[in-house]
Amino acid sequence: MTISEVVGSVRPVLAADLAAVTALLDADPVANCFVSSRVRTAGLDPWRLGGDMLGYFDNAGLQSLVYCGANLVPVATTPASRAAFADRLRPQGRRCSSFVGPAEEVLDLWRLLEPAWGRARDVRAHQPVMVLDAEPRVPIDPQVRLASLADLDLVVPACVAMFTAEVGVSPVTGGASGAYRARISEIVSDGRSFVRIEDDVVVFKAEVGAVSQDVCQVQGVWVDPRYRGRGLSESGMAAVAVLTRARIAPVVSLYVNDYNTAARKAYRAVGFREQGAFATVLF
Image (cartoon, one colour):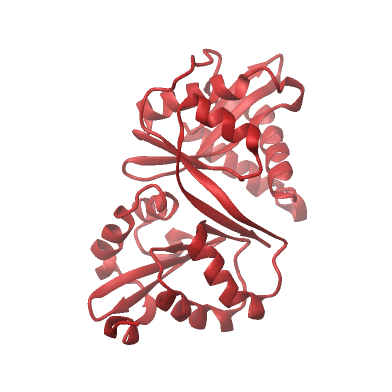
């Protein structure tokens, strides 16, 4: 352990730390896309961020971050900073619904917190992060387009179906349907929802969940089960890549469960390449 690690300490980041926070996030724009997106939109004000941002500082300055919102997300953490963050977070109890980020960092921090926070509902230990920064290798689906608010009554059920299948719980349980619909409406209004609709059925969909300066992160990729096996995921993702690179950011990223071999094969066919791995802890 170095001297700088010995004197390290954790505190909330302040407005004066913005330049240091931005520099740390920019060191890995793909892995840090979600947190960068939040900071780019909201600065460091906790209310606007939707959570707290803790920094680990040593005598050389800011070294690591943890975003603490609905998701807990580590940024550039080390064994020393993870131990310090765990000491800070442990007494507060769990407040997040998931814990996501670079696999090594998430799994080690979770190891430190699990005895106090209790068991997780699911731990997805290896989720390849995939990136596309060039034209897709397969033809695009010309029927994939931006969703509009007129599509909302079709898009929301498709999003619910995808989320439930992926996460294992519905996003509209416990009276959350209004809030969830509002969130999807916001994504649609921002021009970050892409769909192919046939006969009032959302056949294919995807959303851009986070946008930083040069990278966007695609989420919610879904093909209606009745339409699977027709190559719609490849041509649909090719269309999403072209549209997002033209409108939103030059680099398109996503992460996928390692056991989802069909999705990984489809993304590789489009031209995505693997660049590291995430892990997700679900509660």
